[in-house]
Amino acid sequence: MSPTTGPRLSTDDVQRTLEAVWRMEAAKVTAVVARVIGDVGLAEDLAQDAFVQALEQWPRDGIPDKPGAWLTSTARRRAIDRIRRDVNLASKLQQVGHMEELRVAELVEGDFDAALEDIDDDVLGLVFAACHPALTAQARISLTLRMIGGLTTREIARAFLTTEPTIAQRISRAKRTLSQDGITVEVPSGAELAPRLASVLEVVYLIFNEGYAATSGRDWVRGDLMEEAIRLGRVLSALAPGEPEVHGLLALMEIQASRTRARIGRDGEPVLLLDQDRTTWDWALIRHALAALDRAVSLVDPERGGAGPYVLQAAIAACHARARTADATDWGRIVALYAQLAAIRPSPVIDLNRAVALSYAEGPAAALEVVDGLVVAGALADYHLLPSVRGDLLARLGRDSEARAEFARAAEMTQNDAERAILLRRASGED
Figure 1 (tube, rainbow, N blue to C red):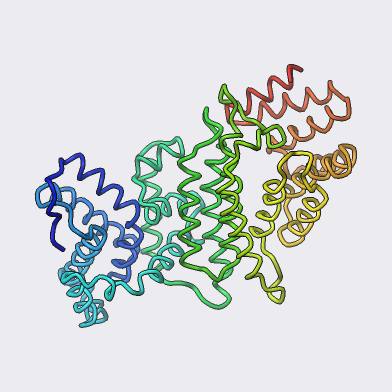
Figure 2 (figure 1 turned 60 degrees about the vertical axis):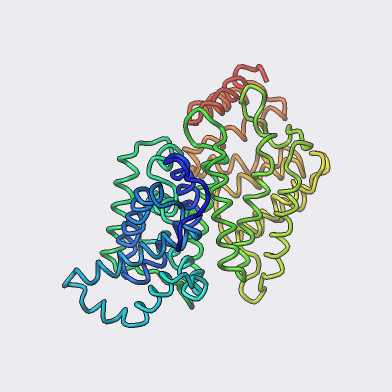
């Protein structure tokens, strides 16, 4: 791993390069170390130590020819040294054995392809560990962004509008839980695979949704979170190419992200789907997404229950993506797809979305009947989109005073400033 022979770079240049390398290689480095040490949380700490060592060494010695492999080799040697020093882990050293020493030697000598040929399985195992159901949803999100995404504590805190100490504590508790519960880097199999994969996909989609429609703060969209979720989705599609739900989630996120430019008006206000200028959609991204959806559909096994929730949601999004104008939308198919989705994943939110589609397929009166049923059921009592949708249906039926009251109620419930501004304008009758 010789350093580069080009011109000496400044410390700032080296740091920018290292940060870019870390973003791409963090998951691989941590996964390899976790296999050696058997402790996911400790592996992440040792990987961070390698990062710090690079910050100290690379400005002096130059950037290695294979910076990712340098980080992996350095972190792995630290893991072996840690095992050697710790008397309590003597038995683990025996388990690592001579093969691990040979693999470290291969890394040092530069035979990286041979040493890391099973890296994909390790990274996928790390993804499953970071998204383990033993952790809270917030912990899974933070740990995934840190371990798999390579984001710093500061970046995660900024993305979720919270403080660095809060994120640091969340990550620390998560790693402690993984260590205490003996959760290791491995890909689940058999009956355990489906629920564990669902947990992984849920985490990625939660990250995406927080970027797509921020739940709080001034901004309606946070592109950095959307981009990171899509990157994670693409990593998963490469690591688990035979899973239809993985491709379905990627297709869903890419279709939704393709509308980003059209979703924000000149003054930063949200622009709803049917009012968007579709010529500004990212049609290259849509084509990529539709190809991912085709792969997902081709992998669906009817004997295993048919299409899953992400494949169905992607199919719904594709109905909008294929319509070059709002009037060309196949609302009947969307209603049918929502019915399929509700059958496998009953949810009042899905019912609300189906009601919106129903309002365009059969008229607002039919949809209002469904929405009023959701109001009576009370399951969405704290969900601001329920009065927002109801207000829209009432407005379309000419019941303006009732509609304004619903918009005012929705404005009180939302925590997003941009969304609140639109709802208040509708409540005042300006829109």
